[in-house]
Amino acid sequence: MPAPKGRQKRFTRWPQRVEVMKRYMKGAFYEMGKKGQLTSAHNLGHVQRVSLYAREYVRLMGGSKKKQVLANIAGLTHDRFRDADDSMAQRAKGIRTHEEGSAEFMRSLFEKRYGKKSVARIHEAMARHGSLPELKDVGKNLVRDAVVFADKFFEANGAYIGFRRAMFMGERADLRKKAVEKGYDLSNPADRQKAAIDFTLSESKKRIAAFSDLSKIPEHLHPFLRYQVAWQERLVEGLEKNNAGIVHLATELYSEGLKANPRDLGEVIKAYKPIAESDAAFKQEALDYLNGKLVEKFRQLVKRPAS
Ligand SMILES: [Fe+2]
Ligand SMILES: [Fe+2]
Image (tube, rainbow, N blue to C red; front, side, top):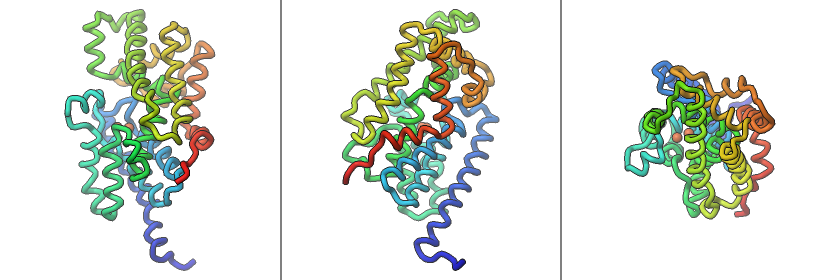
């Protein structure tokens, strides 16, 4: 077969670059894991899924193969460093977030390997993945849109978040302190259940509110986002009404997060034993998501806007 020429030749390198980056992140996260710097919400599985769904977004929007690959790379690296703090609060206080930190750290590595335009696209996607692009900016950098939407609409909404959030509530150092201040004795199962409901509920309400103003979200994503947020609303309703399955889910996952060495979230979900139809439905949907099957739903619900 003759060697590919010109543009095509240049493109053939990009898929290999994704492989290189996958290996790099695997190694980097392995090291961070050993030092206890990863959490259930932010680990290799998280960046791999953001990468997968970000690429799908670019594809659905009709973006070039190269942009699809850039979304892959930006998705993989967007949380190169992630502390277990609340980044919403950090932003409000003007503290440098993990978004900018990760983007800056990776910049020189990218500059040595990729062209200027590609670096700029990836850098913006990483540095600004913490907040949704303004409507007028949607489409300007498809790679950024893709990472943000994959991070927020897939990972931070839907059934999976029910598991992820409850566990993260147990892991967060600030919330452990708060639990003590609120008088919860976390070694007591009844108190642990109360704390799991309390924190998961308040965090969920905050997050739902952040996604309830559809006027700030591009119209072509409304049906998909509604679908995803509906799972969060089921979670909130279940906790408020003391639904046995949902309370069980939140308590089990919160308790896992409290452990000194929590298991991998994907493993925990797989091993989770539902006690009712409500939590069984969450488990099935979360497994579909983890297995990349939500791409199908995404394709059905997201229509590329007419330009
Ligand atoms: Fe992040
Ligand atoms: Fe992320």
